[in-house]
Image (cartoon, rainbow, N blue to C red; front, side, top):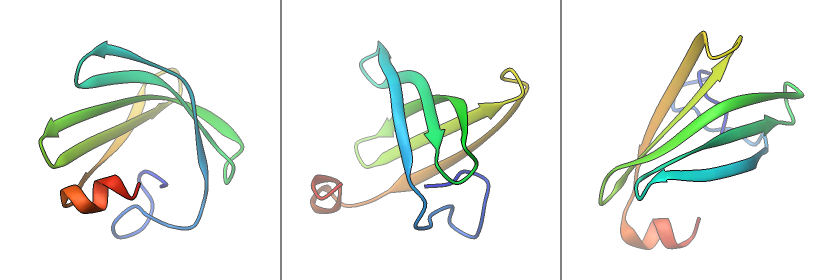
Length: 80
């Protein structure tokens, strides 16, 4: 998933989660490494409901942030 790029934000690029740690039961923070840009971005991942996920990545020392939300069925979540 690439944040801030393209219609729905999804493409074939790869991201790696680094040191993601829980802040609360529904909020995690850490870093995402993007193979496409070869950069790491501060990231928060939050459950916004039983079927909704919010991912936000920040660049330039957390000055510029972009996020994307996703929803899917319980069956789809299991396949992630």
